Amino acid sequence: MKLKMMVVTGLICSGILAGTASSVMADGAPQNVITGSEDGKGATSHGHINLTAGDGEGEDGSTEPTKPTIPPGETGNKGDLTLDNVAPLLFDTHKLEGKEQVYTSIVTDSNIQVTDKRGEEAGWHVQVTQTPFTDVVDNTKVLKGAKLVLPVGILEDTGNVSLSPETYSVEVNDEAATLMNATKGSGAGTWTSVFNKDQIKLTIPAGNKTGEYMSTVTWALMNAPK
Image (tube, rainbow, N blue to C red):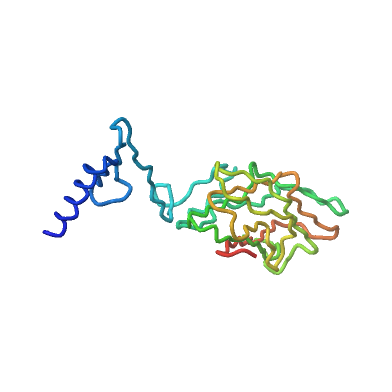
């Protein structure tokens, strides 16, 4: 206690003798230092903020989609690096026409949304795979030769200053394809890759059988760049 009093007294005396500006530190924190001017007519203070890694913003800790799809694609994922929204890939009902047909998505505002709240710009990437289209009643019946293609997504952000990730057009099959990639130093904050539904295409060759076919699409967010 005696040492603390000596230090404070020395500072006060130095200020009086030399006529210099004085400083006051509240609560022992540097950001709380207030420094007066020599002429008594000015002062300096500090701006200060402490940023930590985030989690979710919703009531359940998840990050809500900034552009909800219709029907919904919200994942409900929680954490500091999350895949918040994915694209339902729906192509309605069509009649067989005896020739190759190309069908487009009926989903409104189809998109993929990623949020990175780690605060490090460490990068990430999103990959997609799918199982074969199989009849929902007879699982031995498969949609032969079907090809699903996703276009290059148009990026939307929420007003952040991080560099944007890259987006790619991909053919979706059983091999992992990268459709979004944030290199190191990019991709922080929330990014939404929006697809033009008329460019989400499912090509079906002639010769397939009637049926209601479904495929499981897996979207995977990796915590490092590709």
